[in-house]
Structure formats: C-alpha cells, structure tokens
Amino acid sequence: MDVGDHEGQYSHFQFKYLPVHIIGLCGFVLHALLLNAFAKDPLKCFRNSATYVVANLAVSDLAISLCGPYLDWFDHWSLDMIGVIIFSASLLTIILIATDRFLMVVYPLKHKFLVNGKKIIIFISLIWSLSSLNGIQETLLAPVNIYFFSFGTYLGVTIMLVTGSLYVLTLISLRKQTKNLALDDASGSNHSQATRLLREKQFVRTILLVACIAVIGTAPFIIVRYTLTMTTVHLTLTQNITWCFVVALFYFTFAINPLIYFVRLPRYRKTFYILYLRKQSN
Image (cartoon, rainbow, N blue to C red; front, side, top):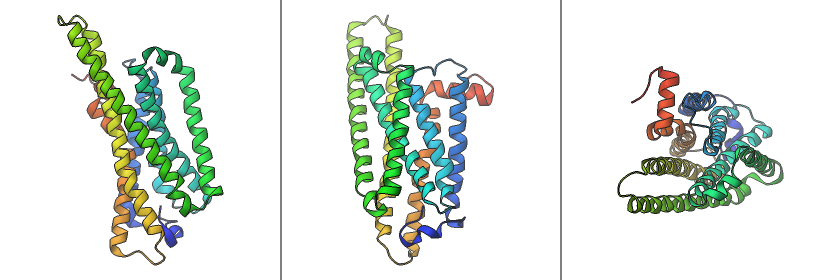
C-alpha cells in the first residue's frame, strides 16, 4: 500500500492506517451479506444476468476489502499480484455490467441470445483470466513505476470512458422508450411495462453511480501514488496525511456498494429486510 522507498515499511500494522482496516472490515461484512442475499434470494428476484455480474463485482470488491488493507502486512510479490488481479476484475466487471444493461435495453433480442446463464459464466471466467494475466504482467514482466502510470492507468481510464458512454446511451434509450410508451398508451393499461422501465432506470442509474464513485476513489489514489513514488526521501507530514486519506477513500469506494444498492433499489432493500431484520418492508 505504501509507495516509493516506503514499500517495505508497511509490512506490519501501522496505527495511521487504522481507518483503512476498519473500512476494509466493514466492506467485507457488507459484501458477505449481499452475496448471502443473492444466494438465498427469498423474493426469487435475483435469477438474471445482471445479478450474476453484480455478484461477481461483489466477490471482487469483497476480496479487495478483505485483502487490500491487510496484504501489505506481508511483503511478497505474489501478494502484490493478488491485489492487481482482484482490482482488475472489479474494473472489468463494471464494464461487463454496463454492456449487459446496454444490450438488455437497446437490443433485447440480441441480449437473449448473447447473455444467458452459461454465457455469463464464460464472460466472468474471461474477466478473471484477463485479470490474472494483468497481474502477471504488472508484477513479473513490467517495471512497477512505468506500468503503474502508463498501461494500467490508460486501461483504467479507457474502461471508465467506455463504461460511462454505455450507461449514457442506455439511459437515453430508456428515456425514449418511456416517452413512446406514454404516447402509445394514454390509458395506462401497460402498467407492467412502465414499471419494468422504471426499475431498469433505477438499476442503471445505481450502477452508474457505483462506477462514478469508483472513479472518484481510484483517480486520486493513482495520481498520489505515482507522485509519491517519485519521492526518494521520507514522506512529510502533509504527504503522509494525503496518502492515508486517498488510501482510505480508495477502499471506501469498494466497500460502500452494498449500501448504495440498499438505499436505491427496492428489491435489494426488501430482501435485506426479510433476511436480516426478519420483517417485510413497505
């Protein structure tokens, strides 16, 4: 987690990183609860491609929350590789979700053919394979300093730009469909169709929010880490405070997703109420 000449320094617990450890533990618990909700599925509403991909995102984010703040207690290149793999998997899963929703809304017939239970498993397996190759490339084949702000940065920026574009196109299509539905059905008989579009809008906007938060947390981390990597002396107090803040923000962006789903998505919220509060939500 530390940078520059300080890479080996963070091979044990340091009090200044206590907020990071707390955030990581909370993220692990929240994602474990989310994955348990997907597995038990009391409302039988999570058996679709979007849920499978969100579950994969939860797995990678859980791994980041569990491993990220603690792997650096141990100084070994293989642990660095694990960190790169799970971070890459999280980024690639975000773009897979965006692609899945884009096809679902804009090309529903193609979606049925391209995205089903078996194929989504293949896509998820491909994500982890590519992430593993990326981990090998960073830790074994490329100098860390050059890679971190070149290939890895450009890849992350590209993924976020493509993801944002897909979400925008999806929302535009949903808005057009909603307007057309209102014009074609002034009597309101297509209530189920309107409900489906509203639910899809909520989901797309929620995942877009998740992606935006990921950018907000990741970009400062990359920039500050690259800047401090160039430092050949001990960090000043200001640099230490800045670094601890961006690290905490980075892990917070991966820990917070289940709470975002709970607040914004009624089906997720109702499932959590049933499973963990033992009551029906309104």
